[in-house]
Image 1 (cartoon, rainbow, N blue to C red):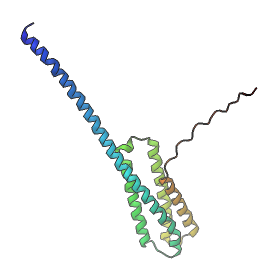
Image 2: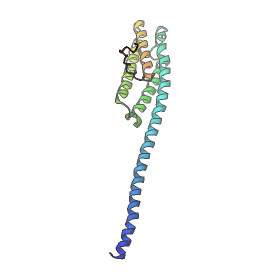
Image 3: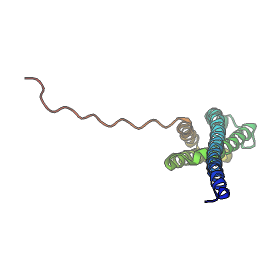
Image 4: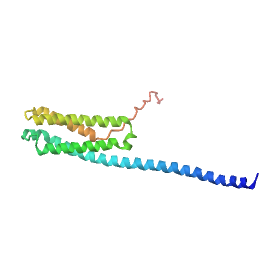
Amino acid sequence: MRIRNKVLLAMSVPIGLLVVQVIAVNAFVRELQNAVTFIASAHRAIEADFAALDLTAKLRQEIRKLPSGAVGGQGPASEARAIRQDLWDKLERAIGEIAGATATRKIDPRQQRALQAALEQVWQGHMRSEQIVSRGDGDINSLIEGSIYADRALVGLSAPNPPPPPPPKKKNTHNTHI
């Protein structure tokens, strides 16, 4: 073997190792970028969750005022209706931000469906109550019922999902006493 070939062979080993190192660093950097993207997405989703929780509390207060506002003669064009609508819009944006986050897509789809179902339930109760208020001649009992329904749904929306119950313990059926 000629010296030139030996030198080329000796140079190809460090160059090959350098190429492997560049590929490994590239893969590592890509994983770090994915982690940073996930963390940023999770951070935005958490911030939106806190905002949604605050909005849910405010909406519960406004919904509790619905029956008394209807009895007091406030019409559908009142300032309270505009406030409620603004809160609903903000809540929908916050939930949309939570649902659209990359980190949210990584969780259990059943959790996402439960969130959407809870939001739909709240929205239906609210719309029913708003329709009764806007008619002006609606049944106050129906309005109270709709407000309670929407309030309960908002509580369900804001409450964290409880952990699943532990599996039942097996009872010792053997008599250990002699």
